[in-house]
Amino acid sequence: MKKNITALFSKFWSRFLALTLVAVIGLTGCGVDPGGLTGNYVSDAEAVIKSLRYAIELPDKDAGRVAAQADARGKINAFASRYRRDADKLKLSSFTTLRTALNGLASYYNTTSKRSVPVKVRDRVLVELARAETALSQGR
Image 1 (cartoon, rainbow, N blue to C red):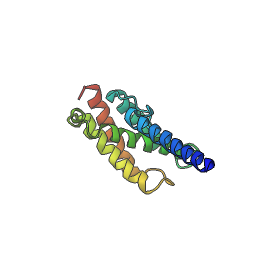
Image 2: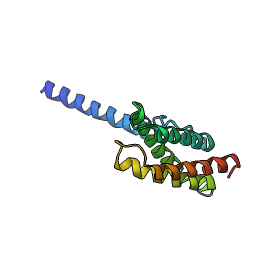
Image 3: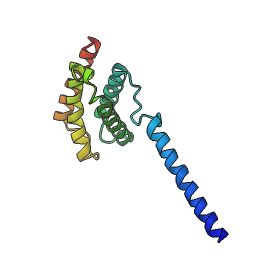
């Protein structure tokens, strides 16, 4: 009888502690941004642009291509998640232009990661990234 009570008590406390930990993390957040973004829109946009340029310009046979594509994909997802509902950022031309580039590249990365980005897609994304950088430098 005493063993059953001890086992029940132990099971209760382990579940209680687990639920408490989940609640604390849910309320406070874990403080880690998977894309490595800072929360500063301009520096985050510049980091995403730099990562995308690097990933796009790597040749097929480069050993770091897969890692660069994974980093770019993570930054795309983190940037979109962080800023897509921010009403102030939605009005900026830098955000809409960068989002166009992100969507074009994300749709390619979601279908394959074994090839480099096709020339047509790469050229379009590079033009959009240049436009976004210009808009960022002008504060738009």
